[in-house]
Image 1 (cartoon, one colour):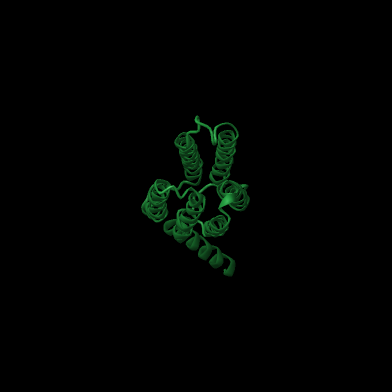
Image 2: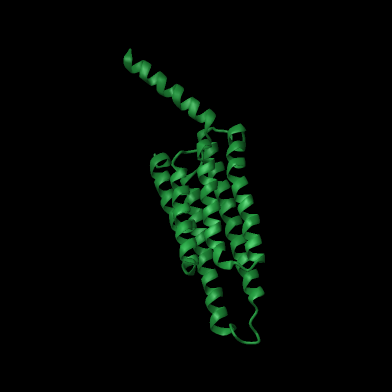
Length: 205
């Protein structure tokens, strides 16, 4: 009798969790986002090194061209991570029989996208003012705030990923010379570690 009651309570708790949190985020989404970021950091590093090795200080130097190339790389990383995240999340939602778009998903989207949208405007203004050394730190900090803010509507563990982004962003703020490495660590390595941990905990069975 006690075992049956305990089982009933567990099922009720799981049903309440499903209704109040979007729990279909896939660990593969984090892994895919991480590898997308590492690929972007690799190509960005190549462009930066080529610019300083071949063009910097010469009449052919085109800082605006380098800036445009880096913006394109960042945009491609964002789009690829978003598309892959949607694909893996949609696949898990179908498998679990959970609607991918509902009240909870809308709340999660709003609470994560608002800080990220404000951060995007802030970063573009920094670039207009040519404060490029603050771009890496700002992107990590606003993204970390978005994750912490949205964690109450999804798997609670995502807030730890947010804390990791915030700490990495603070490091980058004080050591802007390591901005690309910090960016690769925050958006790349931390996402991969988080994704593997979430897959191991929720999906491997």
